Image (tube, rainbow, N blue to C red; front, side, top):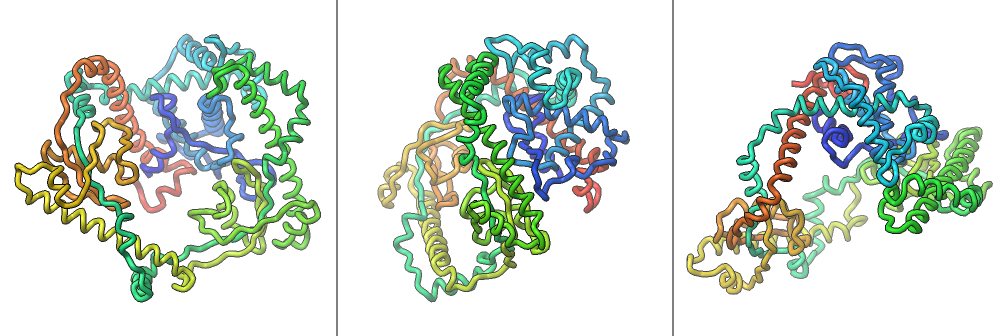
Amino acid sequence: MIGTIRKHSKWLWWLIAGATIISFIYWGSGTSRMSGDGQGGVRGDYGTIYGRKVTEQAHRNAQVEFMLFYWFRSGGEWPDHNPNFNNESLQREIYIRLMLMFKAEELGIHVSDEATATAAHELLRQIGSNGRAMPEEVFVKQILQPKGLTVQDFQTFARQYLIVEQLQQTVGLTGELITPQEAAIAYQRDHQELSAQIVVFPASNYLSSITATPAAVAQFYTNRLAEYRLPDRAQVSYVAFELSNYLAAAEQKLGRTNLDNQVEMIYRQYGLKGVPGAKTPEEAKAKISDFLVRQQAGKEAQQAANNFAQEVFAQQPVKPENLVAVARQKELATRITAPFAADFGPEEFLAPPGFVKAAFSLTPDEPFAGPIPGQTALYVLAYAGQLPSEIPTLDKIRDRVSRDYQWIEAMSLARRAGTNFAQTLMGTAADRSFASVCAAAGFQPQALSAFSLSTRELPELGDHAELNQLKQAAFSIPPGKTSGFVDTATGGFIVYVESRLPMDQVKMNSALPQYIVELRRQRLNEAFNQWLNLEASRQLRNTPVWRQQFKSGPAK
């Protein structure tokens, strides 16, 4: 439960702590038989939070606030334009927001009309141009009204923005209680640099010495039958409505003059600031034009996919072959996937999650699904078969088993060499240098750039080890010592710490004020996140979206 909340409540941090990860959702459209009622199964029953019944209006308000949050956070995109639909995720976001609102009311947290107006103005300034706020009447007419939203919805969103911020400050207050002295100690711990050398033992160095004899491969396969078991798999035929096929028609439908006018209007409104990555007005306008054309192409592809799906679904009698028959009549290409597992999806292309989910729901009696939106196309699917879990014979996968055998044996040799050398280092006389011991054993150590616990990358490591593995090994030993052999996914390594480098006091004094701010914010977030997880596990169990989480019993 706690992991689920942590995963799906990241959007809150943009409002209250400036994080950059949010849940991406999409409200499906068209004739898909996979879409629900839009309420995530909560229509008529919205549950209770803190013993209070959640009303339909409260649920609607929370959904509107999330829609506005999403629009601001995504740079002007509504969630129904996102091709990764997950209505369950939407409901989680709504109920977490409801819980926060109810808690704020319980604690008596309120904000003034003046503060709300200031927050609303700041939000409009973020989407304005040349440092000026977008006029509220323009925002209402161009952004809110097309979605059925009102200025009151926007003002409520701005007010709740501040309320959640104050709630975070209240709940996470203990996390901010850190003195400058404590911050200085923490800074030194995070930024103390080491000078070190590393010896790596990559398994790839030992592959050439491994001979995969038939007997050895057969024994290896027999000992690992469970690892080669194939999961349940699905196979579908499908028609893809590629966005690229509709670009020319979209541009023609928009009309060059009309398109240029729209581009100019948008650019005057947002300027370079509204087009990430654009360095010149010409580049910005080209990107805006491309966006508008692709947006129109998406509508054209959606309409074509809807028309095709409706015709396929209407064919009688209902049978999977109808998709191929209708596609042939319309001169559309039909493809068929190789059998694929739910965890990986088709190997022929990167399918959207909805494609995979739909494929495993199809049956000979309910053989169709779609249109299902993806990043570059919409898909209409038909059942082509399902294969149960099985263990393939060795003859079918001999090459794969042989490669696995060679790699496992090479890993074993690499780890043996690393472990033996680590023991050699332990028995080495104190007056012998690390470099001389390596040379005598035939190994070449590599000097590493100075690094600290706050270091984000170390190019010399390559794919030999994870940076966190190196940090854990290096910072657990004193200068002048070597670590033991550390296993990695590609073999292993031994690190020798030469020295701890002196702290740059001038740099520390300059960075410390901002470090204190960030540390306090981090501690505040940690305290609030801990409260959020605990509170949600207790208070959301009586809401529809969370009830399934607690079927095994109450949270402890």
